[in-house]
Image 1: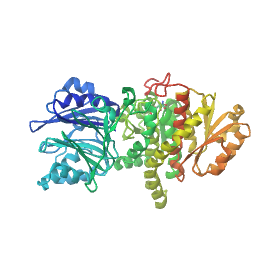
Image 2: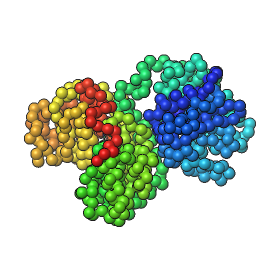
Image 3: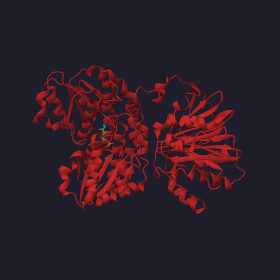
Image 4: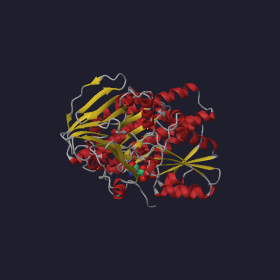
Length: 609
Ligand code: M6R
């Protein structure tokens, strides 16, 4: 996830506006920054690694000439956060510049083709293929104009993108295009703007035009023109007036970052399906070779590991041990050695307990693999191979979008592993591949159709003193995560455990009205969990269930239920089933007048032991 902004002004300097807008976009990415303008027939560019303020101190980002330009704040996906990989990227002749938010899936093929035709690449990014592709198309057909060359180029791109392009050969316009990454046009008195989100241009204008997937926009001093990428047909769309206050603007109109990040999940899950195959394959190869596999993490990332241990076993017949990072050394320390493989999961890549476990295992010559959201974090520097979870920065202290992305990626890893180990039939594999593609839409549906119902349930239970969260099988991980969300932001002491454990102790707490949340996918655990619901019901518990659509049997037993789309394989269930629980925690916290973004005593990244 990165942030883009640009403008074509009627007069005045673009650079200070770009710099200020990038500051407002910094939450989308902050490992490198770049700006470019056209003036006097030449490109003028400044870019470097580091946060905007750091780069500004060295390069003065306000000091570029010209009234047309754009800028980019980066959250690395392809290529480390280095100056060379910072956007903008330019073609061989230094005439075409591009910024991009998203992931070009077919960049490797295109790069090979362009290199064969003599193009010289400087970075490791997927984005750099775009200016070279436009250059190639334009060189071959010099009669084309910039719009036509860009149009032909975007037709060859697979993946997600919001891009902006300009050229010194037609210095009066910027061409933008969108597929699955956000792009909004701002229509002002003094010029036309574009950005990844509305707050970037809100101090300049409150008139916004949302660009849809598959559209291309031509921006000039005169205005904006939208065209369909497929057939170049003109689209007419009037600006909308945005009436957000500055505080709402930072959160794109959401009252809290946590809610914004919950709503972002469909987009982030789509990104999680755009992993670079060779990294997945490499990780799968190391896991396949390992004699003993440990999945090490803390908090929410540990819950993703717990889910992964079920998934690895079910799909790839691989035994793995999920271990809480702070316990790893005392629990497993003596037995770790050259044959141990440690898959470390950490959103921040900086959690102190997790890094201590990694450092210890490294000393013992274990193989360290990692899944993290922050490229260039300590974890990426000390692991043998890592994969980027592509969630974009998460600001809410309670992890939401990073959990679902982690589970999605760990499932894809399990599928690769199963293939390698010949454990799953082709039909099963095809079904999984198809269903995993459907997950972002299912999550979108849950968020859009169930939030109101969850809010009502939250009102009903907001004063409860304790909750149980129960699941069986892989849903145990979902139950643990649902409980952590409620506890950390709503301060309600809650207990989660595999439902089969109830009779071994915890059921003694249950009395009439005691809320018990059951996670009930229609998998192999369905029949048994009905028994667990019955035993709680018999003691007067209030039963709240997360069920699949049309699960009439459990619906009849529940005091309250939330349905999620049906038909997802068991291994994918934590993703749709956690969404109502994230919303439940959020709305209960709000009902209790608590700020879900700033839970007391907690920090986003725990860098002390
Ligand atoms: O950055 P990490 O994934 O290593 O962080 C681990 C935990 O600190 C984190 O998940 C924490 O539990 C969150 N507050 C959960 O919402």
